[in-house]
Image (cartoon, rainbow, N blue to C red; front, side):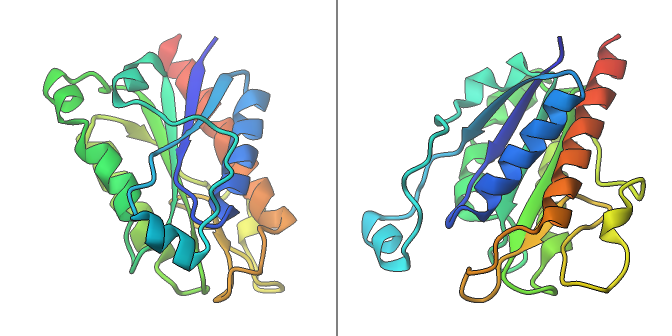
Length: 199
């Protein structure tokens, strides 16, 4: 059975919800799925002052375990149009895996959240995807087979580069059904692609 890791960082829980939907889709695609998060690197006073969520159910991922998976789906919110330092710090520790080519040929994807509709979703996805390409992954986005990302009848995330959600400036907007469906679709496509490449 294909093994998929959903690896995320979430400050307020939006990306955590998307990670759960991504995992659900990957399971529907026939994969065995683990959901893990990267360590918090912000000082305690920043975490407390900003009201970051701290009660996560998912364990912390270890860099050395990444080669155990056939696919890794990476999710993080934007920080000024790029992945946050917490996620970047985790991938900055993977130089040894890169030197060995330990992740070459595996499948990956990215998902994100922003406060506004034009808050850097695609540049944030590309900051994650660039890292994935350097590690040798085959990257799978949110193709237009998911028609939910089309149209402007409602506020919604979604990009051909990966599933997204919009949190609102105060973080009060939660992922919509459409956005969660996009995450499920991408998770399933990645799991199915990984299974085909492993066959």
